[in-house]
Length: 350
Ligand code: ASP
View 1 (tube, rainbow, N blue to C red):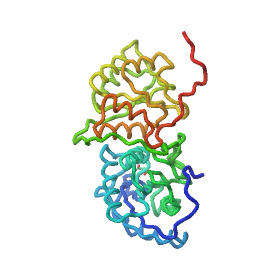
View 2: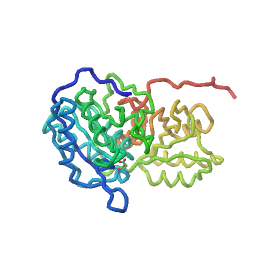
View 3: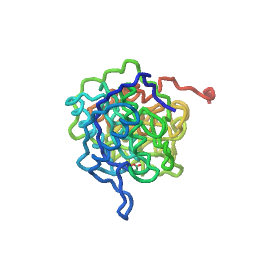
View 4: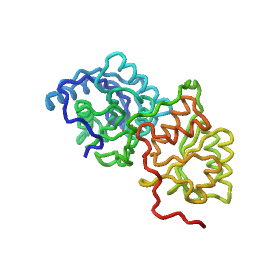
């Protein structure tokens, strides 16, 4: 199954930039567990030569490695920004038909979603890929995943940021890692409906030292102090992954007061749902209304990865207050569905 439409005509010759950032794809085990390694250039060249032979597509490529290749569990708020800068300079220098970013799978959906925002408006596809089993190991999926990424560029995938993995090409703003024991490690967990004409963000000045943003999942027994600590630490904003339509343990009114205090300090709180279907509706239940009245923003049906990426990006470009709220709730790249809230049951008046 392919999650993204590509035009049927395949190019017989492509030019690609390949950026290796780490991940299982190139890992080795020296006895203390798998670790990333540098110096994959000749193996990538051999893999591409084989791709050319087997697919009848000539590939001109430029290969770069990040100075420090990482297990993607170590990805930080800067990782996507650094990758985006390299992608942009490669496009300016070489005008490739597409870019392949080899990345660890653990945070591929987070970094991929952030890249989608960082690189919005570029005219070629950026395709992240990786592996569950390292290149050269028995049963490795590294070569087939790289092949899928290259084929998607040859098939002229529409511009945007995608994850090529297993059998499918996923839009990164809707993708999530769903398996660590299966070649199909990712799923497009939500419908992808990018706007036909993406709205233009206001002119902004990127902040030099933006406050960081975070993600917090509610759970039965959650103490409001824990949420308070998260909100004080992540002053840039917090994505709050709630139950169902947007509910959480109230602890009387303590949780909502913690949220009210944070929004009053200027820390945005964006509510998303941990459900795979349906959307946040802060009007529906009393805890949702209380959060809304305390200043929380409804995050619709965004995935946790996309919500965190979008919040971080909008904060980094200097948006706050009502402007941030407006853009958080506007579908920029297909990260939000266009559907109005649908209720499985009618609202009751009591
Ligand atoms: N821990 C690895 C990483 O994310 C897992 C992988 O690449 O599959 O870098």
